[in-house]
Image (cartoon, rainbow, N blue to C red; front, side, top):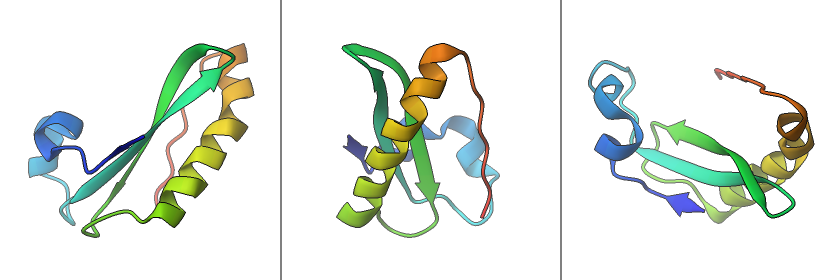
Length: 79
């Protein structure tokens, strides 16, 4: 799990144009068996993610793993 990635690494140039400003990221691996088949990354305009957010992201990763392991899936959610 990677918390608080430097904005330049995680967001790239898009960080300069997004509003509100993205301040933190949370990345968790998506694993099928011993293989990492993807990465689930969440972004927020808040200053940080909590351990509760991390737990939810890890549970989402576990739920997505079988789907991603079967085929490529792209999911985009805006709240």
